Amino acid sequence: MDKKKFLFLRLSKKKRNLLLIILAFLVFLGIYLIHIQKDMSDFGVCYRGGQRILRGEMLYRVSDGHLQYKYSPASALFFSVLTFLPYEVAKLIWYFSQVFILFLILSMSYDLLPSKQKKKAAVLLLSFLVLLKFVAREIELGQVNIFIIFLLLLMVKSLLEREEVRGGVLWGFSLYFKPYALVFLPYFLLKKRIKLVTSGMGMLILGFILPAIFYGFKQNLQVIKEWPKTLSLSTPSLISQYDNASLHSFFLKNIPAGQRETALVFSIFMALVIGFFLLWMMLLARRKGLKEPEALESSYLFILIPLFSPLAWYYNYLYSVLAVVLLISLVNKFSPALKSILIANLVAIGASLVEVMGHKAFRFYTQHSLVVVSYLLILAYLFYSRVKSLR
Image (cartoon, helix red, strand yellow):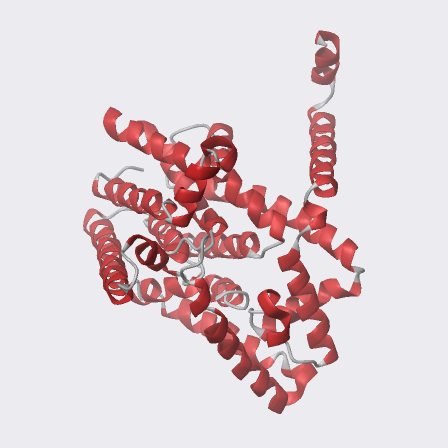
C-alpha cells in the first residue's frame, strides 16, 4: 500500500489530477448506474417539454398528472437541445453536468466571500456534508435547481464586479426555469440597480417571445396564458403536503387544524420580520461602509427562496449553499456558546436522515417541516454576522 502511495506521489501534478478526475468519474458513473438511472423523473418532464415545443404542441396538460411541465415555455427551448439525443444519453449528460456544476457552485460560493477565514478544501468538504441530503435528492430527481443556483451565483459575482447588465441577463435567464429569483427584485430596487433590473426584464421579455418561433404569435400567447393557470391549479393542494418545507407550510402543520387563517397571519408576520432584518443589514452595511456587502445579503436572500416558495421541498434548501459556506468559514469568529449552537444546527441539518434518526423521528421531523426552524436560525446568524461586522 505504501509503495502504491509512493508511486502516486511520484507522478507529476498534472498526471495526479488526471488520475483523480478519472477515479471521480468512475465513482459517479457507478452511482448513476446503480441508483440514479432508474429515476430522474423531473428531468424526464423537461425532456418531454423540449420535445413538445419542437413539435409545436401544448406544454401544459392536466393528463400529465403529478409530472406536469411547470416551467416557462422559454425553458422548454433550453431543454429542446437535449432532445436531439436519445433519452438515456441525455439523462447521463444532464446528470454529469449537474455533478460538475455542483462542485463549481461550492467553489464559487467560497470565492465570493469577502474574506477567507478557513482553508477552502475544509470549508467545502464540511459544506458538502451539511448539504449532502439535499444534493442527493436533487440529482436523483434530475431537477434544475443546481443550474439555477449556478446562474444566481454568477449574478452575485456580477454584482460584486459592478457588471449590472451581465448580472441582469443572468437573473432574467434564471427566471425562465422557476420564478424563485424574483425574491431579489425588491433588493435590486432598494440598491438602485436599475440597469440590472432593466436588462433582466429585457431578458425575460425575450424569453416570452422566442417560443413563437415554433408556435407562432397567436398560439404562443395561448401557451403563455396556460403557464400560470397550470401553476394555480396544481399548487394549493401541495402546500400542506407531507414533505413541503416552506414557511407557510410550517405554520399550517404546527397550528391546530382549522386555523388556516391564523397560519397565514403568522406567515405574513414572519415574512415581514425577515424582510425587516434584511433591510437592517443593508442599512448597517451602508453606515459602516462595508465593502462587498452583497455576498452576505445574497446568502440571506437565497434562503428566502425555499422559505417563501409555496412549493418548497426539502431539497430546495440546497439554495442555502452560499450561507452554509459563509458561516462555516466564519465559525471561529463566534463566541464558544454561539459556535456550539451553530455547529449543532448544521449537524442537525445534515444528519436529518431516516438512517440516523429512525423512521418515527424522521417522519415527525419531515411532517412538521422542522428544517424551517434550522434555517430561521441560520438567518439569525447571518444577521448577527452583519451586526458584528464578521467577514
